[in-house]
Length: 172
Image 1 (cartoon, one colour):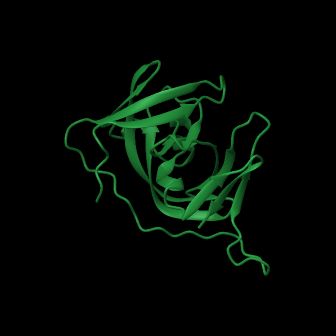
Image 2 (cartoon, rainbow, N blue to C red):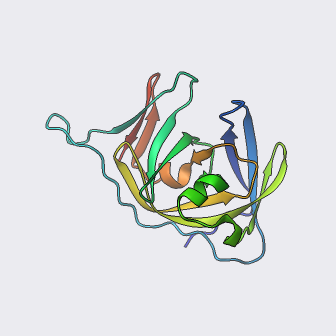
């Protein structure tokens, strides 16, 4: 089991303002730690290339927006390699069947706008363009996040990912 570091940097890009916000996590008390789970990745295969990668096309705003399946529900996520974990807005958490009011907000998140609280959760699965990861650690932000983020708790479990001028390539 891995413990989140007392201070970890997370970058967030606001979809509304396209402004960058840096957040820092710190654990409140001695609550349970987030765990790195076993990886289960799949992607579309073709006859020409057994390792065909999943792709997320770059949006006209210059960002990579992933239309993901999270716990079987569609969620639009901003790809953020600076985010330590997948970060969910309270609204997206509710759509996924989580009750934000019942969560334990044990992490303090510091943004450019001030401090907010975040609750650790475990997502059964996150699938982006066919690249599926199970048991993904995530944080539900109590407030202050305008869009959910696809962070390193998903991206870091791929064998590789790369940004090109037109797409983000996800390799299992």
